[in-house]
Image (tube, rainbow, N blue to C red):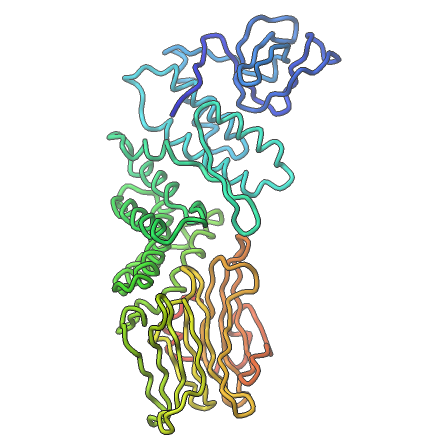
Length: 479
């Protein structure tokens, strides 16, 4: 990290919109505006004003005394600067100011007294500031100004567009530094690993090969950390992150026609080890995100459930007395074609091709209908449900998607069938524009029109009687 060359006579701006004026009075011309965390050189004092110079703005003038705090960069002042840093570290909205005090502390503290604490604090504050910038709303001007302020201390951000909005992420330089420090605590190392493995900070334009390599690196980084010496909150956050990362590894392995069951089982094991109550309200979203991602790949962990690409041959589902067969065969490179066949007449009833991953173990016959449901995963954290059914004597394949907006993360599961009303029972869980929704549905089989919808299965009468026993046992939707 490159720190600004702080000088011995300086002050840190503690408020936003601090006006630097041409004369030491409030009616004088405003020359420039400084923001929380800005550093100025103090060159004199007059009445209630300080004569200052801002190297970032390359402008001098007069600034009211209450807008700044003068600091000294001496060994004796280092403990006081550290005390202020500790206070600001967990103060949302004061990230730029905290990073400025951290820079002053690093300049003042003697080498023998330097620990990992300051680097850990800067990383956390930089990450929090980036999160604010990603969803700042009406405060965009002040947040942008604070990002400029921290850049003078070498704090760098990455930004890219995701789902129609700008995602800002800390580049993690100091987190890498923390992981190399011999005196770093388990908690500090965990903070660094969590900051470096965020799924929302992966560039969506990253190619498949680079993305697979990145997921492997994230998994290795998280596995290097022990769960001992961590607070319950950090331990559950770490396990939720491992679950999310291993779900990504599972998808990449299946897509490359490699065995993926072990990775899927690892993702599920990490998820079940999470204690949601320890996460509080602030980090519940991380747990739900992990649940959705693991749910999307859960069929990879089913016994005897390789992907079609891995099998390399047709996968057969032969039931209904051998009258029907569901086949899934590799076609063009990366493509799989699924067909429902009449085994007795040797005819194909319906056929559809996909570049997604087909999970044969998910195929299930609705014998009372008849109909077939099958899970297909076109994206890492997005799993659809294919429904093979008849309309007017003709077989069709309809695709049920988790949501309607741009894919982020989600899945749709077959949860049962009510023969009396000929309705499919479904559960959908989706992350759209950084918000999670989960709901249960009753859908007519013939035209897949929604009949009823509720936030909990007990609110739908048919769920109580006709829900699938296997779904009830294995689903993560009831978390």
